[in-house]
Length: 347
Image (cartoon, rainbow, N blue to C red; front, side):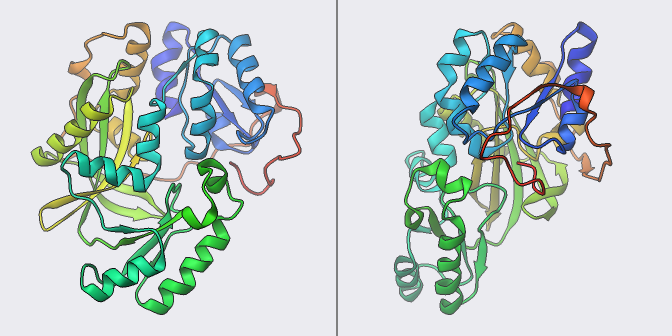
C-alpha cells in the first residue's frame, strides 16, 4: 500500500511518512520517511502526533490499526487546525463499525439480516435449547481486531470454558482499553455461519458521497487475513454495499466482510479503514490511492473512470523480505515512553 502511494505521490514531489511504535516494522522501510512514535495509548501520543504533523506539514492521515481509531477521532479538530485531514469516519459511524452489538442494531434498522448475537453464555445456551441457533458458535470481542481472542466452540463445555478464557485474555488488552467497557461486556457469542465469504470495499469521496463498491470473493484465508481473492460481479452485494455506504456517509473507504448462506448475506465486520482487501482492488486495476490523492486536492473531483475493477481478476498475497530500517531514515523518533511495546512484537 505504501509503495502504491509513493508511485502516485513521488512524481509530483509528494512523500509518504510511515509511523509505528516499533523500529522493526517493515512498513517503515517501505516509506519515504519513518517515524518512531509512542503507542497511541500513551499520554504523550497526541502531542507527539500534532508536533510531527505540524513540523512536516502532513496533509492527511490514514490509520491501519483499529485500536488507534478512538484516539485519532478525538484529535480530529486539533489536526484540522494545523491543516492535517483525518481519513476516518465521524464518531457515530465509527462506533457503528467498531461495536458489533451496535452494528447489528444499525443493520437491522436498515432492514438487513444480522448474525444472531448474544452477550453472555446463558443467553446463547437458552437460544440453543429453544432451537433458535445450534452449535458451533463463535466467541469474539465486541470490538475485535486481527481475530484476537476469537474461538469456535462446538458444545456447551467448550462454550463455558473458552468464554471464560476470552474474558481473561481481553482483560487489560488494547481492545479493552479502546472500548471503555468492563471486560464482561467486551465479549460476544455469535452463531457460526457457513457459506461463501466476500470482502467489499465501500468507497465514498471525502465528503461522504457514494462512489462505488468493489466485491471480492475470498478464495483462501489465514489468521483472519485474506491470502487469495477474486473480483466478482455480484449485483446483489453491490446494492447492499451501496446502501450501507450511503447510510454511513464515511470518507473514503470501509473494508467490509460478509458471508452468504443460502443466498442471504450476513455482515461480519465493517472496518472503517484501509483493510486487508485493499491490495486485491489495486491489483484489479482500481486506482484507489490516486482517487484519494485527487480528492485531497479537490473534494468534488470526478474519479469514476479509475474505479472500475477487472472482473475475474485473481490476486494472491506473498512474502516480501525487507531490510531492517536504517537509522538515517528515521526523521523523528519519540522519547522512550514507559509503555514502549515489547521488542518482540511490532504494534
